[in-house]
Each structure stands twice: as structure tokens, then as C-alpha cells.
Length: 622
Ligand SMILES: [Zn+2]
Image 1 (tube, helix red, strand yellow):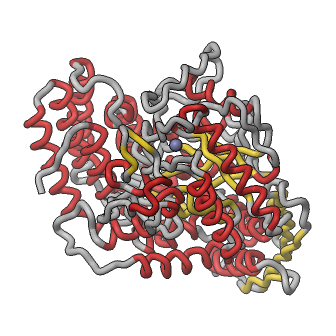
Image 2: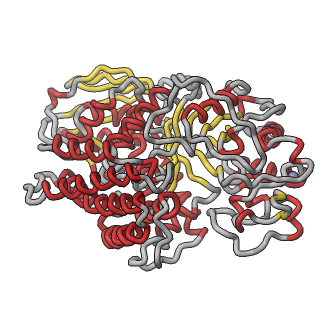
Image 3: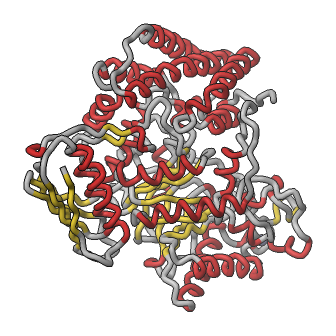
């Protein structure tokens, strides 16, 4: 059947893209039918702060898709395809189920408004350009509307992949900052084509204000220039790069020259990059690295931060720039300012980043209110408890009532500790269901883009829940598993659920004592379960569909790797550190050998980094 699309000329590029996608997918789904089918795409624009919204009216005679912006039309197109049975199971067009449908099956009346304004993913891990482009293509299929490139140039994420950091079996490829800039520009073009929102930078401003091009969390190789040293924070009596790393070095914000340099960088960047929808203004990464000079001690870092943001806002206003600025509640900045207040709240978006939280439970809104602990300069500890994390958010919300979203990490680090992904998916769904009550209008997931071993269920659940906070996570889990594994999917779901029950994301992420007899026993049982489940899959008949066979094969491989990791953690929890390291090195050998086959699914660099740095299995022998 021939699919015709009608849409107004001169509209947003995303509208034309949505029309082309409908033509392509429906053309394949209705290939067995005769005649023509026409769909009309209509824009009904409303205020920019309104959430993405679309309505669909589809019959065997024709269809109409009305949307409030180009991106919403694209979301509506994918929504229709999903209602007709398409399943976008993971980034990459090879990982989709596109069924044949009869013309008579074209029936749908539905109006959808996204539950939240901000629904995005932020780049982490080690990524090839194919990984980035596939992810961007997948975002609106999964219900997301935003993407975040960290640093001015996201060099470090690309370089980790092209240099094959962490995998000695793959020879490094040449890759430069200029290469990263070119790849990022191409990827931003793909975001624009789909009308997706672009977030940028966050990390790196302080390093740049100290005269270093900052595109990674790496030592600069050169000492801080004497001419700029007075701009750096005074820590332990010295003004120098914190642990040698510019991105982790704070400024002496009392120093007007330092604050001016920071402000100039932001204003010039905003002027040169009008395509950036949300520009993130963060201070140094790491914590307990704040200036100890006499003047800085008279105030708090958060007060200095707010004054800096007010200065940037004034300069942007003078230049006639409407760039939205995102400010961050993280580490020292979790403590609300004492005196300073944002003067132009409409300019700003609050971002709450509970990086140290537990991932074994959703945000706890029922716990009794906890007081914010006193702020002690360069002697803070990060809050683990959910109630304590939320106390900081409430403190800030008492002063700032503007737009805001959470920046969270279930798929950056935590997911490696849930071997079944079902438990973590439920935690994510529970978190999303609490966002509105927390006074937040969305979610940015700081995550590996290759977070799909054994499948992309947690990301899928996240996107769907952010579109519809009332959705039932159990239905989404069944929808996903039945599509990914096909006939016999209940067996896969059952295996994944049991893996989740015995897993401990918190132990893998370094929370709790390393020696723990109960944990040792639990990981022994988890290892046994992995091996037994792997054995039960021996001799199974291959799935008829290549997409599904891929999911089964990766489940088998995942069980083998997870058995080794479980045993390594059991040994660690028993205090047998050498044995733990031996098993972990076996795991490394296995996943490094298989990385080429598993590239889009498993981020070998990041799994090894997390288990080395946080679990306590390191250091790795080179
Ligand atoms: Zn100072």
C-alpha cells in the first residue's frame, strides 16, 4: 500500500521527519494491502512552556495527527506505531519489531499530553558516534525529548571508546578534540532534525576560567599558570589544580577577576551557540575542594554560586540573550544559600542531583522530615538516605519556585548492580511517579548510552513513564519482555526477576561495609542462580526472529558474565580479596573478548571503571 503524507510547507524540520517516518514504517507494515492511505499532520502551536502534546485520529480511510510542535508530532508518530504493534526495544534500527498489520487494523482515537516537560538523557560512558546517533534516533521512539552533551566538547566520552580505554585487546584509534567537535556537531544536527531539546556543558567552566581547555576529567599535564593562580581556590594552603584536574578545581569566587572570567566564558558561549536550549552552569566536580581564603570563608559556596548566576543573568540580559540556565544542587551546592537569592527566576531551571542516593528503593516521600546537617567547609559527607537528600531539595525549593527537574543516575553505575534489570526498572518507575509531588517537572538520566545488558528495559520504562506517569510498570515490563523474547518470554522474565531479587546495586556501588557475611551468602546464591539459569537455556531451540534470538543470546552471555561478577563480590564480602580480584580479572577477559560482538549493549570501559573504583575490586593488573 502507498502511504501519503500531507503537512504544511515551511514548518519545523521535525514535522517533515515525522511524516517520513510514518511513510517508511507504515509502508512496511501495510505492504500486503492495496491502494493508498493518507495521513495529515497538523501543527497547533501553543506556549513554549506547555508540555509536548498530540492527538491521533486514525481509521482505515485515513489519519490525522495534531501536535503542538514538530517534536510532539514525531512523538505522536512513534506513539501510533507502538499502538499498532511496533516495538522499539533498544537504540539501533536493527532492534525493532515491525509487524504486518491489515488496513482494517488502522483504528485509533487518542489524545496524549506528556506528564513532564523535561524528559532526557545525558551522555556518559564510552561512546562511538554510532552509539550516539542510534541513541538520538531512539529517544523520541522511547518518549524522551532532550539530550545532554557534557563539556563544551564531549571529547572524553568519545575518546574513551575510540582509544578503547579499559580494553587491552582493541588497539587505540587516533582521536582528537577536533574529531570530537565534528562528531558532536553532526549529532546536534540529528537532534535539530527531530526538534529535540539540546542541553550542554555543565562540567568544565572552572577549568576554562583557569586557562585550560577542559574536555575531560583528566590532569592537564601542565601546572596552573602563575598569572592565573590567584583565581583558583585556596585548599590546604595552596592554589593549584585539585588532584591535578582542572575540571575538579574550584575558583576563589570572592576574587572578582575569577568570577568575571567565568561570567565572560558563559556569556560568550551563549552568544555563539543560540541552538543550545539549556546551558548548564556548574562549578567544579568532586567535593571538599572549596576555597578556604579568609573572604570565601565569610560566606558559603551556594551563596557565591547564586551571586555568580545573578551576574551571568544580568550580562545575558544586557546582550539580549534569552538562554535558559540550569543550576545544580550537588555536593556542596546541596546546601541552600543563606542570604543570596536568584533575582530573575524565569532565567533559571533547578536541577537536583542526588548522586549518592540508594538505588534499591524509590524516593521516600513518607519518611519524617530530616533536618539539613550543618555545612562544614571541606568536611562534608554526601547524603545516602533518601529523606536526607530530599531535605536539601526542600531547602532550595523554599527559596526558588521556578522550573526544575531531577538529574539521576540509575543507569550510570547503579544498573551494573542489578543483574535482572527488573528491580531497577521498578525503582525508576516509582521515582517518576513521585516527581510531581517533589515539585519537579521532569528527569534527566545521567547514564551510559550502552546500558542494555541484557536488555534496555530500564531505559524503556523510564521513557514511557516520563510520557505517562500513570502507566503501570508491570504492564510495561510484560510488553517489553514479550516483544524482546517472543514465545517463551515468561521464562526470560522469570529468570530476570529472580536475578533482581538477589542483586544489590548498593553493594556494587560501594555502599555499606565491604566485609559482610550476609552479602557474601547472597552473592553465592546469585552466582548459583546465574549458572543454573544458563544451564537451563542449553539446547533451547533458536528464536525464529533474528531480533529475538539476539536478546536470548545476550541473556546467555549476561548470565556467564554475571556468574563471575557474583562470585567476585561474594569473595570480596568474605574478605578474600585476592580471590575476588582473580574472578574479576576472569570477568574482564571475558567481556573484553566479547566487546566487539556486544558493543552497542555493554560498556566494558564503564563496568570495569565502576567495579574498580566503587565496588573495591581494583586495581586492575594491566
Ligand atoms: Zn577564596
